[in-house]
Length: 287
Image (cartoon, rainbow, N blue to C red; front, side):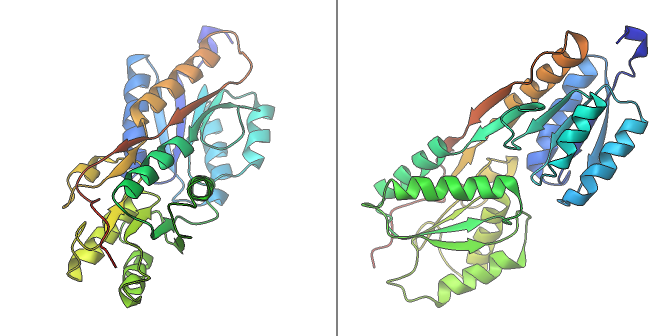
């Protein structure tokens, strides 16, 4: 495309702009776009895959030069539309392995392995895993990685309890599962609760606090993502850090390269999680 034929406008679709995870990605992309002389239009799906197509149509009427899709939910029909429209795009963790668009893939296994080894070293055998909604690709990816990693440690760990919740803060399911945990016999109760994102872990910490349960004295709690609030909870949250800033910057570089240079074959870049140990994990309660 000729320079004059460009709009210098980029689109970004996220699942939830109020979630600190997406807010940080958005801020990093917006800042990089601004520095490179692009404007950014950001739209939010509120985790509804049905809205993705409408958002894409809306952004195309603005004649965007390229698109970021950073959503927890997927609509694979979108990939065909991007291809037909010949629109440069970068996906975040859609599991396409860069087949039709550039992708930043998240590899969960090594981080979850480090987390499990940390809990095992503290004497934990009975774990509960709190999964996000099964319909979300990233929730499924986190749960599958947890199952794989637990299976490799079956000597050290009992079969975990699996609970389902919502990726949002303050979901009623988080309170309900804490009540379920309390209702269990102490000898069967998980000594550590592994939440598959920080917002759920924070909701669980709150529900435990309200019920007078000491963390990590009576139960350890861990999250995933390392959102900004994770270090400010009481106790501060042990979690797995996703390098969001690095992910957003790499995504921007990939998109800029696709727009401004010769279009190349789509690539997939993988990032890993890193264990951040804080105060919410401690020795397992003997029982």
